[in-house]
Structure formats: structure tokens, C-alpha cells
Length: 264
Image (tube, rainbow, N blue to C red; front, side):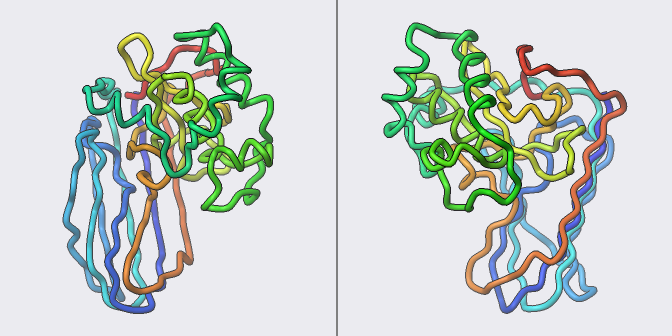
């Protein structure tokens, strides 16, 4: 499998600011080629790479005011080995988090999925969320969590993932959020899916069914959208004036949403 991904971000920066980008494929990807650049008003800047335990690669830099162009490209050959969980993961990803209010949704989860466990539970939660939500671009706010998504019955990929994660955690299944490049996604963008720990492995869950999971490429991993944002900044304001994301694969697989799939 050969996956090719590119990203371009154009930013208008109002003043000196501290930025953290999460757009590079995860550390354990098998790179054929890779490049990442930050250019402010024609002058290249150097970022510091920070890597977490899941292989998420953050690139941090301090920039003055101006127009910045960020470009990333990579060719990834084959599939990385699936991540495993440590004891801390199995605690962290069972807890409620900012956008995954599993404590509030526990009565709903127990009522809807009583008696189910393992992969049967994953399939049931995925189908339940897919049937009850409508994918509507622009329909949710960045501050919406799983509870608000369920009330609104609509959202985008991050909202679907939040609801899946919250329901699974409410039923004692460790679950987390992953930002991915997703060949086949239309319109193309960064994509968010869930991972659930069942029978000793992390399984990919995508209730949107908008792209095949087999060719998705991991970018970042965390509790919810707060941990996997493609850009965060502090100090000055900035505007995203242009964003282009592309992800292609040499052969697009078929995925009806029922297969057991791990990110790789």
C-alpha cells in the first residue's frame, strides 16, 4: 500500500504568537519521503518536534506577525504495526473528558446496549450512531461535546467520534480519538475516528462511513478533539485563510463498516 498525503495551510498572524501544529503522520509510519516547511513572509522558520507516547508528532514554533505558509507532504509505504495499550492508557481512556461526557451518557448507553460486549458492542454502537446522526457540515460548534451532538442529532466527523467514544467509555470500554488522513474522503479534509480497546487490541470505529478505514493514516491520538487539533496557538490571534488537504492511496479498499480494522 502506498499512501501520499499533502497539506497546505495559509495563516494571517496578527502578532507574536506560539503555535503548535499536528499535521505530520505519526512517528511509526514507514516513510518513503517526507517534508515539512514553515515560511513567514518568505523567510523559512524552524520548528521543534515533540513526540508523545502514541507517536503523535507536534511541531512547535514562535512566530512574529505576518503571512505564514505551512506545507507538509509524505509518502508512506505499507502499514505501521498497530499500537498497543499500556496500563495508563486503560485508565486514561475510560475517564470522561472535555468532549466525551461518558458519565452523563451512562444511562443512555446502558439502556441501549444492555447485554452486549466485545465486538458485538462495537458494531452495535457504530450502527446506532450512524443511524441517529446526520452528517451536516458546519452544523456543530467547536465547543460541542457528545451530549450536545446526541441532542442535535447531527454533526461532523469529530462529533460522530465523540459520541461513539462517550458511549463506549460509559460501558467500560477504553476508547479514544484519532486524527487521520483518509483517502477516499469527499470533500477532502482532516478526518477523525475512534479507537476502542477490545480483546487486547485497538480497533478503528468510524460511524460516518465516509472513507475506508483500511487506508487511513494516523496523525495524532488523544482523549478527544482537544488533544488532536491540527493547530493550536497562544498569545496573538491568527486567521486560517486557506487550507488544502489531500490523501490518496494506490488502491482504494472497500469498507462497508462491518469489518474489524486496525489503523496501520
